[in-house]
Amino acid sequence: MPSPNATPTPITPPRVPLIDPRTGLIDRAWYLFFLSLQDIATNVVDDGGTGVDAISLIASYDAALMSVNQELQTLPPVADLSAEFIKQIQEANLVDCCSALVSQSAEIQKQIEALQVQPVFDAGAISAAIASLSTVPVTVTADFTVGTSAWYINNKSGSTCTVTLPTASSWSGRQITFKNMQAQTLVSASSNVVPIDSTTAGTSILLAVVGNWATMVSDGTNWVIMQRAANNCLLLE
Image (cartoon, rainbow, N blue to C red; front, side, top):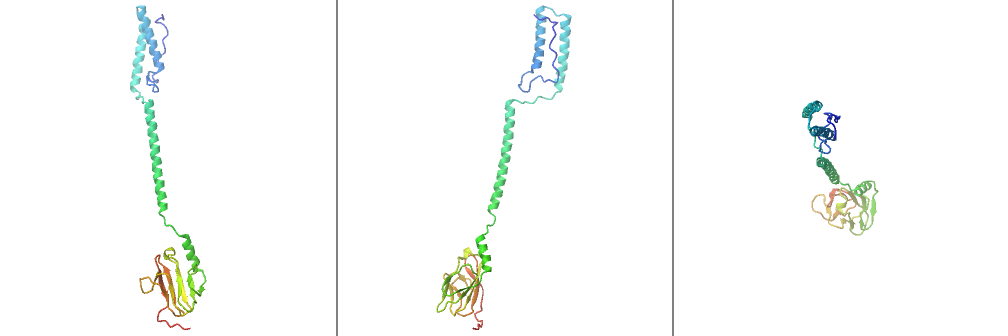
């Protein structure tokens, strides 16, 4: 059986925590130290006496333990780093990341919706309107349909000339000018012409007078006559 005078395990430094934060159990160094004390105390009792050396050893250990206890009292509490606590931290971080992603997605969606409500320009209509400003007059000798030109001269003889105008809703803002070179009226194929002195759409465009003229503009619903030769204007042939 070991002698009480055997060399004991050195006391563990105070900087080593008594409880291992990774396992929640007593630290291995402290365990070996306390085990050494137990073995020495057991041997002393079994030998039936407590010699001077054993008493001095126990007193020195007691003093050392009191010093360690004082050190422990001044140390901050050991944080609980158990597996469950770490898991909670990880989950909390994941939730924060997800919340940030959701916020960013919502902001991007708002920007996309803002882009969708921006005015949409009809490039075809704009191009046609610009092109019409640079077209040459077109002379017609029979009923006709308005094309890309903005200027038409009616030279149909013998009867009224009928013109088919573009759908006003497809040509908002476009203007067309007609001029008469025959003593025949010019009318629209549909009741979509608003006279210069009225708000009611009809078919009349030009009077049966040579030199009579009119300029009309689409308002998106009808073709509105904005300028025309005066009814009492003296036109010389």
